[in-house]
Length: 418
Image (cartoon, rainbow, N blue to C red; front, top):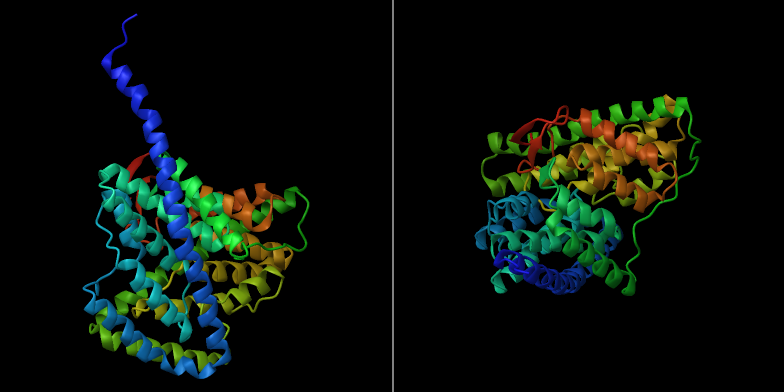
């Protein structure tokens, strides 16, 4: 029987590709996982230091100036954060290795001095830049370079949060809305598992919450969850608008980046003193936990949006996803009583709905709900994600995210997010 050369090549190279990605995923999982774990402990250290020494907040303007100067000296003053990682995956844009130490240090400075931001933006950039650099050292072609960058994002996210399934899918889903990069599924999943395994070995506790007052499925519950999905979509649009409006206003009124960082830091200090609470500085994970336990002030989500927009818009570093968790959980907790849900369950729904709306990642959001809250009432979390995804428009945390297909009809639109 004659077998064509094409068929021989096809069946010869697939096993080699499989073995190649097994090897690369293990390397990326170990390297990026260890760096992410070190970031986790460094992050906790500076957070504890800030809480022990409240006067550090008054150094925030100087910290902002220092961050701008470090990026300027490194030739990356126009760094666009996580947007560069998305471009590296979609268009194979070069992601320099120096991104990792720069965002590592600058995020720690932001949190040490009380800026309002998250940590996942830093970890995605760290994972993406390290893995992209390993890909260049291995002389990977354009397509494989994109996969290895996603592999690093997955390992970093998983090691930091302890959610390997959501991390793997997030890396494949975040770049282009409506398109999943399934070619990366093996390296993304394996590197995420290795990252989480290393984290557990080195005593990094996975993020998880217990929901109080989980309801039974009923027609009324469906209506309540639909209402929360609609509200969550509205809050997610507000969050994205604030994150994009703040840097635009800084550009208009304070075009000098050094002055902008100093003024932005000063605004955060003044607002913190007016509010009379340090709970909104840093990531605010303690208030996320409180909201998911059923306790949140009704204005908390608005204050977090304002302080995060002022911080990141001024040039400080960090991420927007944990602040989005904060916004969604505190809003959901406060809104739950208005629609008849338990505050704890409402906080969980709100947190996932807002995350889905700001990232346009419904599959990741459903899996994140499973890994954070367990499988009970997962169908309700799926419903709130579906509604928030559909109604949140084409807004996104990341301006370089591509909306490939319409959210309303199976129509190819291929436009950037707002």
